[in-house]
Length: 230
Image 1: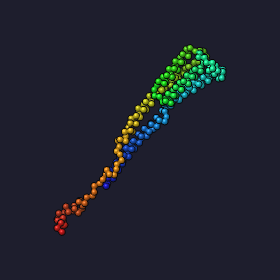
Image 2: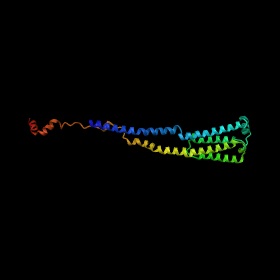
Image 3: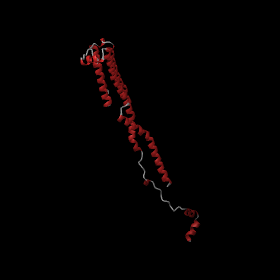
Image 4: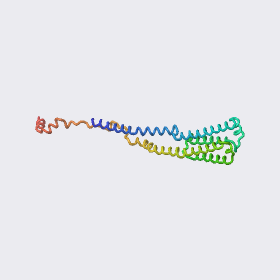
């Protein structure tokens, strides 16, 4: 009976230790899976915030340019309703809107893990800005003729650098780091035995053949012979 209890206790202790060892592993896997399902990574969120900053900053500069050059209402009518490619800054604002819409759709909504979307937006931005600076008369319109094209060009390349050197490599590194943990968590239940039933343990019945009296008879043959005669 004691051997049965000790065997059961040892099995329970082994399984308890195994469950304690796998608890942090399961917690890490669950947190990783929940993070993947419910939200985007921190570095991707930072990238999306910078894309939003790009749009807001270009918009702010354009509004300041409208206000400086004669008033917002007058300049909006001149640059939007009577759009002139050679003198208007409205197309640079639309270029920022295009970058924002394409990048947020690709990397925040669709959670794309490839660089082709940022490559398209950067290529379009660079070609458009270079051609506009060469063909248009922006450089003769004061400081904003230099400021808006240069800042728009720089922000487009900063977004490319963030995605290509920060977002995609870090997400790939995290996925590579957590993949063995996920695999081990899937294989972990196979390493421990199932619940043990009481029928697997038994104790032999007590034997009466080796009682104290029989042992005494074996050690004293004369006493045993007298008992047999009587």
